[in-house]
Image (spheres, rainbow, N blue to C red):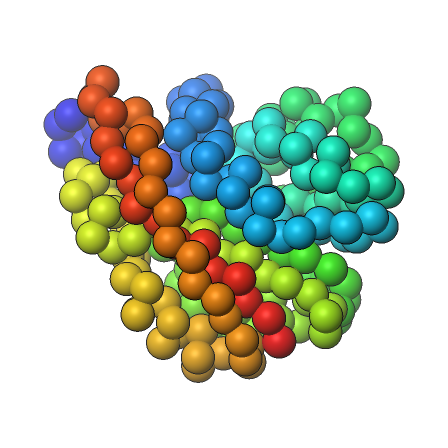
Length: 216
């Protein structure tokens, strides 16, 4: 891919827009579904819990969350108007159980201690002030709650041609250090490896990623 094409891809991975954004959303859902389902599994969802997902994309995976237990409430937030509308369209039969909020990417407009579980997959690269953002997540998470943060490891991500554009990459150690500066106190690290189709070619590549289980 040409440099300009890679830049457009990077912009749409961060904030999908319009018709191209819908295509990118479908591709992201397909390539990230393994990471997403592993993250959902890690949450250990129980009956009557309220789950928040940060950066839901097209949210075609929401059914996998709602099927984990009974009386689950899901809230998804995203900065992309395109993904916000796609998520509502794809999940209209879950109305009343799943809702979607368009937000500006920094402040989480929820009351303190609202959510039992919070998770996010492949969004940390775009956080402008990660420590402050982690403290916002801490604020809205219940004291007994769990936050799952999933990201591609630096040594894998830096091989992808589009991550040169506005992606902030992290090793496990770098991410640990950032979390240690936040209000969160406990963290468990789990590393994974999977085969996925490349976003820029027909190749199959090995992705190394990390799931952090974080608690107060």
